[in-house]
Each structure stands twice: as C-alpha cells, then as structure tokens.
Length: 131
Image: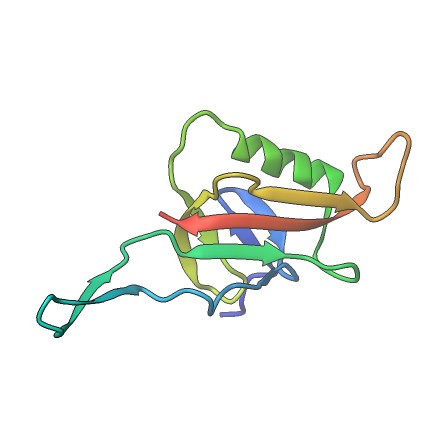
C-alpha cells in the first residue's frame, strides 16, 4: 500500500512537506540524580507517559498551507473541547495528540496582501504534543 500523500490531523489534511523538526529531541526515560548524605549516588528513573513534542514545520520553499486550510486548523486549535486528536504522518505513523500550550500555530504569509484570498500560501509551524 502506498503512503498517504499528506499528513492528517483529525479530518484535516496537512502538507506532507511539513517536517517533524524535533523528532529526536525527546526521550521517554526521565532520570534524576542526586547524592545521599552518605555520598552514594541515587538515580531515579521513570518513563514519561505523554507530552512528546511533535513540531511540524514548513520553510520558505516548501511546507506551505493555504489561508483557507490554515483557518480550518486555527478553528480546530480553538475548539473549546480538549479531546486528543488523531495525527497520521505521511509515512503511516499515528499518534494521539493535543495542541501545545502557548502558541501552537505560527503562520506567515508568503507575500503581503492587503485583502488576502483563501488560496494565499502561508509558511506554517504547528506545535503538538502526544496525549
């Protein structure tokens, strides 16, 4: 079976050229080290259950979204219910995600338009975390 042509978030299609830029900047094991009063090293290890960042980012020459698609994404990010969403990457991997706190969507138009049309392309950065 051929891989999908796009990433999908819930029912929205995202350009497959949005690259997961922080894929290898997170690890599941969480370690804390300290010394006891006797001088022995104490290492606590736990496994993170969620919260892995998934930042999908476009750049000036690829990963663009139209203003109309961006408006749909923005509406999804601003929905009052905070239910996990299904993210399927173009390579077939799937994740249960939420929008990251703060500024989950950054978008900059390719050109400045006084009256932007629905098909105006934007460079997008989308910040998600695993649920």
